[in-house]
Length: 318
Length: 239
Image (cartoon, rainbow over all chains, first blue to last red; front, side, top):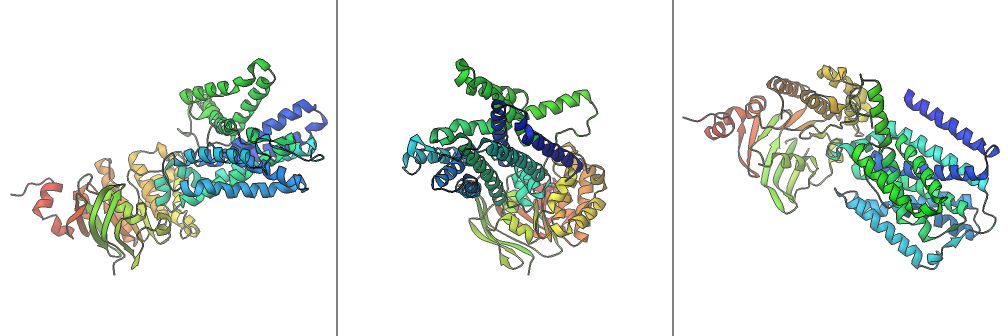
């Protein structure tokens, strides 16, 4: 890790410590909002490992969220302590990522993206159709599994861990291989990068993280259904957050997640605007695509460039 | 036994056939060049040999073993490295990162620091540009970086696809001088080049590709006297 990474890592650990002692000072409503923001950061940053660093756009991450949530709910109903179910959920999420990745990562073009939509919809229909998942009416967690303090702390730690992992990946040979694949896959392969395997690993890592978040989601909301955890709109939000914030950067998904969850919190508390958040997301996406495809991070760098004309680098670092 | 040979290669892009029954061989220590017009199938042949395109029929023999259809990353481990056309650097990674990624293969990674030193000694300009993004380099520098990145993989045989494409004459000479130096270091070269006079002057032997078929072959000294080659590729009308 270089100096810049060490500074960022220190800032993240400090933020985590502050967030962990926050429950002593803040009221429950605010803590709930913080939980939502951290949840969004986890999803956006995990997606960004494959979608941003390696440029493989998936619009099906709700599948992993749902797999994690259902694993936790089903096992908790069997009497397993909910936090003990998390590793298994992560493992299942990672395993399931191969179902989509294995047949499509070898192909060039939009096949992977298309397959992610199809597979995640198939999973949703399946979960709504079979009986052991409770069908479309979903599952309620067993009583006594709710402990907000614990779930809050777990989500904060997970969010910090994902961001630290992103920092580490960015400067590791593995991360460089991901960038190489995004920027020129032919060159990457010609120089010995096994692109299919690298993509599969990135997909599995991010899927496992999203499944973990799904488990924590089930614990926090105590009730899950195909309509909540396998929602296609959720998959879309997971893509939009990093794009608006700055795809392929570490800070971008965090920024995007904060903006999106803030918007959603505000809109949900205004009954007249309840259903308009997708409309707003769409608008935001269009603005970003038109004016700054590199997202808010790109806009920030451009601004810095205006303030400090002699830029050392003509292009942003990935 | 030749280091690398193609035997009766037929390659397709989807349903479109690009190579018909192409054979060639390269001995260790040689420089062999493939010449031909645009669309003759030169790049396709390199891609096929490097494992980026599987041939429908035929064998690619490396060290006496058929490797046709083996993926590129495995061939890189075996010492066969392709420097693709138009450089194909990773534009928002620095020059140094581009070079370091060249030594990604398991075989090359332990030697990375040493390889980097050698490459920077061969192309001092890359040392100066090491912290710059590769996308900001000039065309000539990008070509040096691409060749350097290929060398980082510790190839025994290096496949080059049009390394002089779009370069000013002075830079073309520099690139060809570098290739000579690389051969002197013991690397075998298979070169695809549109700049036929330079290619024939550098290489030992040449194959002429026309519409996906090998139409003639021989030592470069002989081919550069061949009236048809002279007329078609050297722009010299035979009297």
